Image (tube, rainbow, N blue to C red):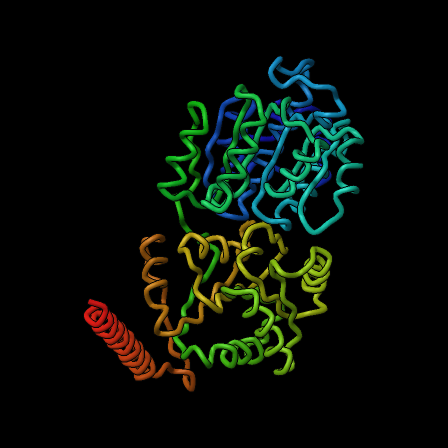
Length: 427
């Protein structure tokens, strides 16, 4: 199959030639024909396999060849000033970085067409976004919270949306997003095309998706919830308090030049970046507490090689597209096993070889077990000389936790006896 055989508009084909796209990837081969027919699609494929083009190209093709809806439904009809600029296609992403990445890709694909693309996410000026939308945007790429800001301010109308895309749909349908998603869907026409794309789909997400999609066609290029074969995985057991020391040793002794490191918390990402700096390793951090400008500067410095290490929370697990990124490090185990797939999917992209390293303290073994069950494979482990974990530490921690629990129970019993005594005296 070639892109020409898909009968794309000549202007789209010209853009693909300029971008160096020679032939469709597996997910594109399966998803694009279905999307071109107007089917609802639920597609799962590993990161770095071309999912963005798989939904962007058929979306653009349909907008170029199908007439726009000329009238809104009677129930939602209002004057243009009140309802805002009508959008023909909406793409939702969970993070600012992914929204920007999808916007950049979509703009490149639509370069030779009259279709206009706008992007809206938090941390940047609403007025600038409104100006871009009112300039005639046909396609809007947005994060849920900022989109609702525009909807409530009546700068955007969703009553003419013809295609609705959820990118990284599993995260978008997490409980933290579902209320916003429902509010957004209530403002769109019932008759629309809906596309779900992600690297992982839990059973809960699949159930919810089938409630939203209309007779969806399933596309699974690889088995669900799998890591790319191009990523070499390794786990290094180490005591929690020595993780930063081991990470600095690995980066320095093995001459790793571009390393993306994931931590659980915002504070942890800032602290680790500072600790690495004290070891002479240039590092920056990005997390939800930082402004969008600061996050973009950190990402630019990392991509350009000005800094060696980028420390991030899971806010960056979706949407970072760094060419030839060689190393991803799980400094902390992720809360959800599915997030491991997305984290390590930042490396080994487009057929390149990548390395995923996990630093595991003994009290995180449960998280490794969950990941291995999800992937249905054993991840190799290696104890590095000089950094072997001390088994007595976890035993000591367990003893302390048990003693603390017993102490709490003793205090509770004491309070009960005291209260009983008070009741007796009152009688």
